[in-house]
View 1 (cartoon, protein in one colour):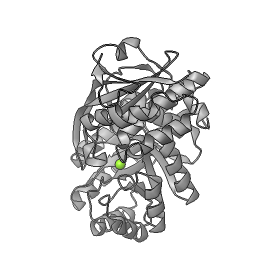
View 2: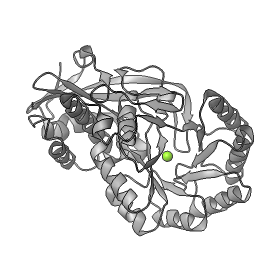
View 3: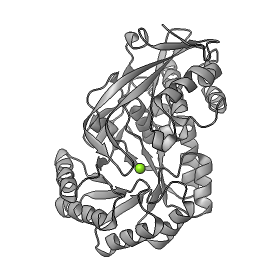
View 4: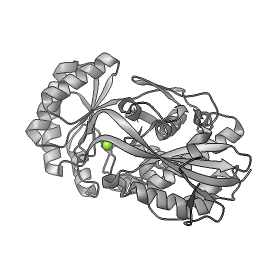
Length: 378
Ligand SMILES: [Mg+2]
């Protein structure tokens, strides 16, 4: 079979409550679904979200990249030559990682459907159930403590606190949450680039001295400040994880060269899909870094793809895939099932979604062979 058409469709996703970090406040988002249809009429599905402050992409730029160079690179190619198709797709334009991720996911889904196998099995099949942490939005300390208590009552055993504010306030946030949930709950913190290196060292040491039991600190300093990141990592005993500083395998090599972190958080929207994510994981694991698989605020299609990757790879020790807990409903049925902290992978072929034909039939954009940037709405 050859790849016949690429489709996109926007859909709006509401959140059950605002998601607040040091970088942004989100109450809902628009997701872009991508369909890839082969010459037999089988459809694979992928998804992208725009996170401009992190990847530099907008919804419009993602649509333009898919309508132009990315679909031109894949239409007409054999579905079974997945790796070669993905390599050509990735090389057709620099950057644009979320646009590439959507098409990479859709091609993986189509390829595994054509083989009649669940994608997580084809990616290694190490386990069919995962445990994710859940994010506690940045808020007043008492509010975060109440949210933490509620999530633990829901069944979560690992919390990720969003920090990145003034030092005394951030310390109070961690202290109040630890007091609220007790010693048995795992607490991770994510500053989302909100501190400078000296602020980070001072605060993390204070948290260590108070014995608050923080498992790791994610992205304490701005993405480009690798010297600052290395200084923090060398100055504290709590493991430090790169998120916004780590997009590509090359980024991991640079982080390792500088002894800048102990761990990396891999997200499909940052690296450009499952194929580059596997490379990031392999390089990080070979260098002795701990590996996490996470996501942006995304819908269930791309979150399921990330879960398939995490389930397939033994080096993934931390799963940060709580986006489906935040979203209300889902546009596409099937895929992995989120039951509080547990993620159950589907045993259906591909990602396991039931792709409704009408999703890509009306009011969507289609990019057939030779369509390139002259795409027309159906
Ligand atoms: Mg993060």
